[in-house]
Length: 372
Ligand SMILES: Cc1cc2nc3c(=O)[nH]c(=O)nc-3n(C[C@H](O)[C@H](O)[C@H](O)COP(=O)(O)O)c2cc1C
Ligand SMILES: CC(C)CC(=O)C(=O)O
Image 1: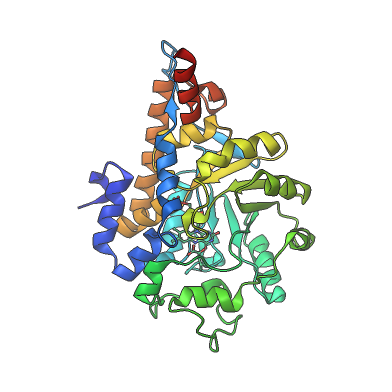
Image 2 (image 1 turned 45 degrees about the horizontal axis):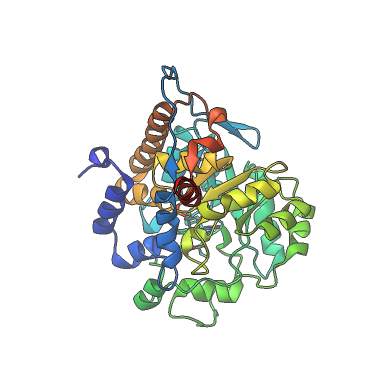
């Protein structure tokens, strides 16, 4: 079946499952431990209702928006996900082409299977570089400078991964990269031959051996001291940390629980978005990822104050199903669903989306109780 026949992301995921080896599919799809947060990332969206306005002239609907000064076709961007060659032989190069064709922003994972230079060489496109801080700060610094040289426009520092969450599927599968897939950005830089086998998952052992667990707020300043690029902090789930992030000079915040792959029992990202926006939204853009699968999800996040959203697994499943064409189709689906949602909500531009367009579960119950 071609990706052109698929009508939603659940179908992409189901088809990806039939195409990929179990070890790869499980790595992409799973969350940590018993996956409470993974289910919540989706379920929390279904608890938010929409309040459409009618009889608005929606003959022209424009979903375009601006992120960090870049004009893009829609407020849906692509989150960093590692190891795209596990999904398709062309890896991140194919993903990058599809994203620039869709005229939106890609965050390239520092753990990509094509190098950041190979991705940059695919042609023009707005790209940010996601950073994991390695114990070896010299190599970390090199990565940041290479990203600058290759034309990346921001550094996205992931702050929720001092260790890898317990992904039981990976442990059971004894996750291991096949010979044709490697951490391209650090190839020849990090000594990976003598890694201590701390876990049955090679990925967890990689993080255990190489990631800098001492990473703390002072390092955000350190990162700013080695780059002129704006620094976005990815993985914030509390108002307290959002305030610290702004104090530390973050140019933006990503409310994210890493696709529910790190700490289980953290809340769904959409359920903490509004309090973070209330605390710091006036100062920096607040983005969200986690469980976005529909145009209506995008709309809900924007109504609760997000400046844009990112999708992780959807682009990987698109890639697995049909390479570059699959990722293009996934992004087209988001654009199309968002535009239809906007029209049915009585909204012609992203700026018109406001808080009154959504009703949370709590508001729904308050409204019912007040009538009793
Ligand atoms: C397979 C996979 C690999 C990921 N790799 C990275 C990574 O290298 N760096 C990072 O900051 N986040 C990584 N993430 C987290 C994503 O950036 C993002 O937060 C998450 O996927 C969003 O949730 P969603 O998949 O429900 O859209 C990864 C997520 C997945 C599913
Ligand atoms: C290489 C890994 C640390 C990538 C990652 O963040 C993930 O699998 O969630």
